[in-house]
Amino acid sequence: MLEPVGIGLLTRAQGYTLALSGAQLDAAEFDCAVAQGRSALGRGEAGAALASFDQALALWRGPVLADVGWERSAMPEVRRLEELRLATMEDRLDAALELGRDVVADAEALVAAQPLRERRWCQLMLALYRTGRQVDALRRAQELRALFLDEFGVEPGQEVRSLEERILVQDAALLAPYSRPTSDLPATRFTEVDGLHLAYQTLGSGGSGRPDLMLLPGLLAHLDVRWENPTLAGFYRRLARSAHLLLMDKAGTGLSDRRAGLAGPAQQAAHVVAVLDHAGVDRAVLFGIYDGAAAALLAAASHPDRVAAVVTYAASAAPTAPGFPGATSPEVVAVSRAALQGGTAMADAVELWAPSRVHDELFVRWGNRYAQMGASVGDALLVYDQMGRVDVRDTVEDVACPVLVLHRAGDRVVPVANATWLGAHLPRAQVAVVPGEDSILWAGDVDRIADEIERFLGSLDVPGAMASRRASLSGA
Image 1 (cartoon, helix red, strand yellow):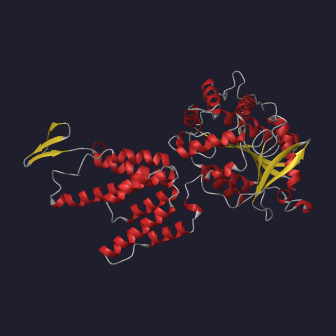
Image 2 (image 1 turned 90 degrees about the vertical axis):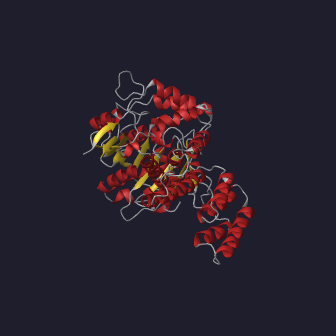
Image 3 (image 1 turned 60 degrees about the vertical axis):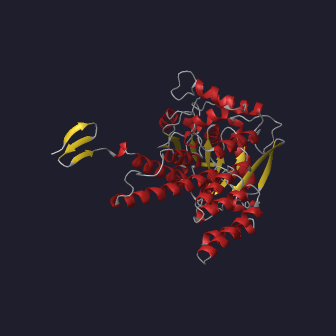
């Protein structure tokens, strides 16, 4: 019979037993942190993965089970944990490489510590190549080959040989994310409206029942810079598999003319029709984000013959209206305006707008570049303030087409109360509140957003006008 002596310590005839839960074991905590890191890395969240791997490795204080490692029963667990520690060090290096960090010194140290682990040599070669040292990277491959031939009489594995070949031909895919050139970037077209040139791109093909889907960006955007973000680019390409996708920069931002000043939602709605005309699209589904959602709803109300349906994401019905349940908080306004002016405030904004990517250094750097290319500091502040004045409460009852209202449940920038209000006041609304705290579309579970959009598009029963294009403009 066991008798308690102290916390977790029990006595029995043969001696003592230490009874602990898994949460009290550093080995269990290590396993959990490693699993979380690998899961985050698999999702492309390198910053979060790096934090988890650092947490795991910080638990080590020396050899595992140092006092009893010689016991036969302990040897399998000792070997398992030691191997997992070595692999975690390599996983950590992968995460740092994905973040675009210069990790040559770290990779050199890992190779020196375990020179027979091929994965470490590959990481070193990749780190060298990404810092512009192609010759050094190839020299390391030769060193590894000489080592293996001398020690074992065999060549290194296929992974090493393949990486060496890709370095030789300067494979662009070896570059860090956000640095990889986009070879198949869609061509940018321009249409003129009242002397103002509007930029747009198209992706995917129509016909075979595929709808035309036009994306109206929110706040700031830039047609070319957006393709540098691998998550955003993947999201667009996925939508283009089931729709003819149109992307545009609203007047005053991105590649569209800026000299005429900013366009309000009503003017943006007119610009939507102009782009559809130039692209040869008779009728489209509009996908509006933030204030782009207001423009989409206004276009649907004022041009019902051109808008088959609307998808909104993080739409605000009246951001600054007194007493409105979905109004934007003063904290959000202050943090967002400070971030648009540059400086360290950008980190605070990412924690608010995209909390799942707060550790992703490349995401933060790219987000800052995206905003800066989207508009000048002064214009960016004007766009943000204009977004705050949007009010579609008197418009929604005139929107007769189907509307999918998309929102993330934990959005702190645009409260989910907006989705509830829109769902109650749009005549043909479907509301999809998905899990997550990110406000920015391309942070968090982007596939879930795409799932909802594809489901909605598949449910629409609109005659062939949705997929038709004027023959005279096809391929323009």
